[in-house]
Image 1: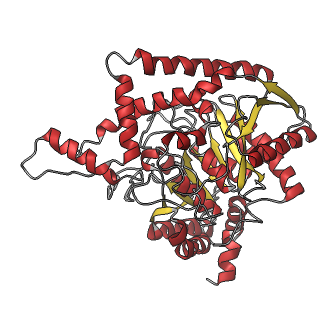
Image 2: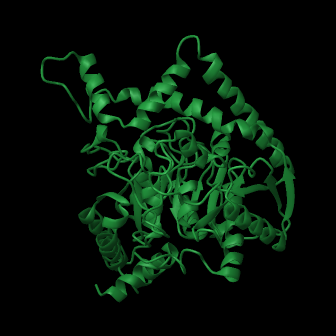
Length: 502
């Protein structure tokens, strides 16, 4: 393909790409080849991908073109390429979760989400980089090296799903999948100028998604526009009998909401706890402009006080490590993945210990130890039990808030992207990146981050977070689409028009 054709294909939205494939203006193979060429050209700098499945992607694309040639009806995302976070099992394709302990592991089955993507004829380009076991806010904790932010390769792309967000921002894929335990879809979206959605907990199956914190983990869509995210959301959501936490309820009309965005007459809440010390001036400036824009569009702005939100970070960093210490106990070097010390001179316990020492990185070890301590005899009630009580208070604060408003808005992150390495030796500073996103995970509500401009002091993207009640995910898209359309009309799209070249 010529450079001009590649540029044309990679700059299309997912919705536009699907339309052109369905009409025959483009073939799925052409679109896939264009994105594979883009990956080859720029990913050495970005490091968004851990594994590119070139042959598998082209085979999927050819199957889509054959369907169209036979006159079969194509789905709304048929032939559209996607970057898949390396936390979902994919039959025959490596799944590492960013960890040495699973390096080289080839799953024998597909996650439910992977199956849904394949059934919808979405073309999976490969697996994206991430913080090991989704533990991190910068993708620096990956055992395979950090990912760079396409806006500035010396800055972090967010985490844990920095590979997925960077793939979008560098035009290596128009769609991506992330997972969100404390903000790992929304925070990367904010710092890369993309759209990321954490659906209601249980709305997207976790079967085949390697667990970090089972009561918090949630897969979700990542894209460059609100409509593209909605189209992907509709593909991956729905009840799954293989997941005991899956909600048996209809998928909210997210695509319809994205196509008919409006905030006229809606009540939009602004929580006073989501600003103050530690927030970058440019982030607050862009957030205040977004609130003013919502008011211009016909929304009523309501100030909210949610005092328990100040305790969310502390509660999260007891609950999540406790659950991770339980979930990661399965990685023992005896059943699958890495095995160290199995030379006939060590006991099974010693093999397990040596395997974990070699296979887990520093952040994973830190959280396992924190969680094991919090769950230990004599400390359970004081730590894990108390954190769960705080979680209940946070849920009640949300319930009271949603009696007064339809959605809540806030900055997605307190700052823009920070330099790689700046917070590597300061876990508390790193954890503060998720200050605004964590309460939603603790309550199980739905939330979205979308671009709301660039911070004037560093010219880096700022994210606007929208939070909706559980099972009201369509409200995210209704508000998000209205804000996006008004923003584009006023200032242009910060990514599609201003993204730096690589």
